[in-house]
Image (tube, rainbow, N blue to C red; front, side, top):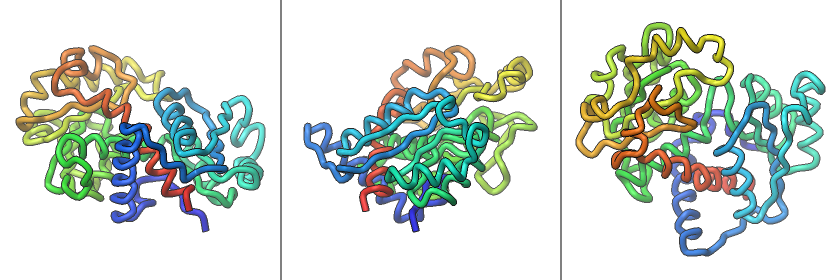
Length: 299
């Protein structure tokens, strides 16, 4: 049976640690201008219902560097569940390629692809989860606090400020739990992290106390643009600025999955400042995706 990566929980703790170690090793090889190519003659079909910069480039370039190939299919070319039934798309692609990666509005489409394709299916983002981003987040935390060793992150703390009921926060909470990292989330009422996924706060200063990393994300996700005015008002107190970062632990780092709306959920001073690891985090998308692809498609 093929292995899928639809959410962080699809990997055991040992598998997660292995993927992160592999990502770190592949990045080191790349820095030395060496290439391991375990995916020669393997092809990944990439389906996009949503726009993408970091996700598309990291997966497409990752396949290239690992010796494989990627076929990119846009929303109008496939029409999941509209032009063609999702299960039919999965069955067709599964007979032609070695893996399917999809960036979708509805997480159920990923589940249908996984149940019909007969090849590994990777979640490149859905309304419920963004596990590929969470792998890069973990790799960035490793770089800052435990280079090369995921298990060394145990006992650290990450705080997320903003919309706790979104895909990034949900996946970040999952990867933190798997690695023994404390997770706190500050959100206004109606936008709280689900119970059981970490400590929940309304006051962002309480959430960031003793945090080793503070994470911000957009206040208006794709698909919620009609709520923009209300969301900006509700989330205004959760902007990540220098004062909020000062309330965290000494040596704190600032994270953001990008794209960032500068001056809205994060200030320029934080994003471009000495405590920011945001662009290293973006670059780590490539290395984290390579570790995942090698694990899922390299067997």
